[in-house]
Length: 359
Image 1 (cartoon, rainbow, N blue to C red):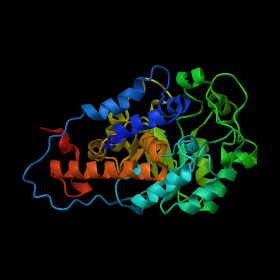
Image 2: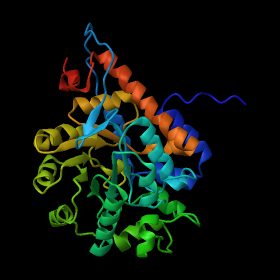
Image 3: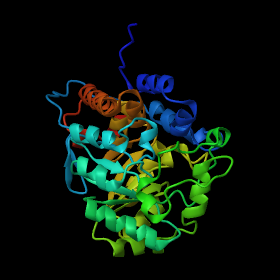
Image 4: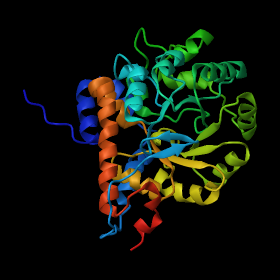
């Protein structure tokens, strides 16, 4: 049987749906409540129109950039997403190797199914570790110290999940991890398994473990507790981004957790220019949420982002063909960004600006 070629991210999403069990697809793809923000994240990039320049003499494009001073081959990096072993047997190691082959940043979720020591041993620089703050500060500090020792080069603090947004797909599926699959980084600390409850096991885990009353004092504590730079992920407002920078964050990620937390939060493309204007002189700004095409990446750069994080597309790639699938997704986005730069009249990333939205 001849299968059609997988030409874009949407093709990988469809192929992953046909291969992975429904509860896994629903977990990867679902959003909070009515999934308004989930849809708007993608639709927002589509609605932005590009007023391209012609006769711009564009030669070979250069998409190299840096994140916190570390070189990457393109402004497309692997977002921290949980539970990669639900997508493929090698899990996070496959994703880390795909990022390494692409010459880009890999960010490991603290909720990975593979221990950080094993993943970072297979990952190239730059490699960062995403952190949730647990109610038990000793557990949080242990994760930070282990990440440092394992070779992490920054800590990405997720701040938009003091609790878990209600994901009705997961509640209907009674989502839990299969036997033999655990939250490996937390297993030595006695927090490697979901509580045995009806409904979403992840929601119960978050209620039991994550610090609900997160404050800027927690960011201060984290900055004091590590020599690594801190990136604050989950910012939706300019004033919050600026405060995060004033409290020591070296970068912020404009993010609504992929539409999985507060439903009807604005699409990240709407928030990004406000955050750039408020905090762009104080820290680096990245964005995630709904990036499905290279032209979306170009639009994010035009609005002032230094790089974009992609999450679900990597999971779809892993689900279809493991490391090779995730690598192909990254190369598709790279090729599409290159094409968009050529057709917009941009030779390097610095050429891409808000002029693209002005007739």
